[in-house]
Length: 236
Image 1 (cartoon, rainbow, N blue to C red):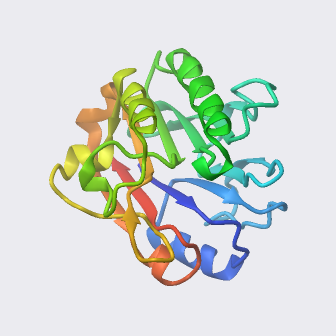
Image 2 (cartoon, one colour; image 1 turned 45 degrees about the vertical axis):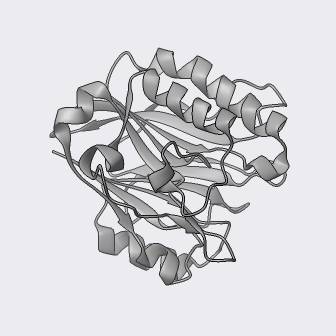
Image 3 (cartoon, rainbow, N blue to C red; image 1 turned 135 degrees about the vertical axis):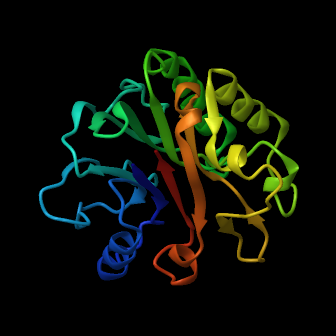
């Protein structure tokens, strides 16, 4: 199973987005920070999808699969107005893997204030245990990283790293770091050229033996289709 997680930065380059997605041959696509209209074309006809629109300055999410989506949840964190991030969850049944729940997530940036970001993260931490009753993939833009190797220049604060640690301690594995323990590779760069790996694919521990590849697709960013690289996860 091949899954692409990608922050589009609200850019509406439908042709570029579609071309890149088709070239990656995904089975599941999780796009975050998408625009106000679901103008995205699935990589192939007949895909199932769910769209959660933006809320204010926070972009929407779009989750699609070549296999049917079941147990779809467009508001899995409830309706607390303080929870400003965007998220969508659904279960799929991949032929080689079986049933897997996939969660597409966009965590607000700290620029919106600590309270906004932390309300979302705490709500996510409360909900995740309910999803860890079976195989789980959580992917998207977390605006978080844990280790110094994931920051070209220190920026994240101690409480943000603590939240990332809490996510992993629930029973999730950072797929990229599990397969590339010493590799420095960033998914987003500031206008000053400083890089961070803030886009992730986290998998439940029962999927760890199935990790085949997890790579950062730089051309998703260098082509200017987005200001973020994509993350391509392969499970066998």
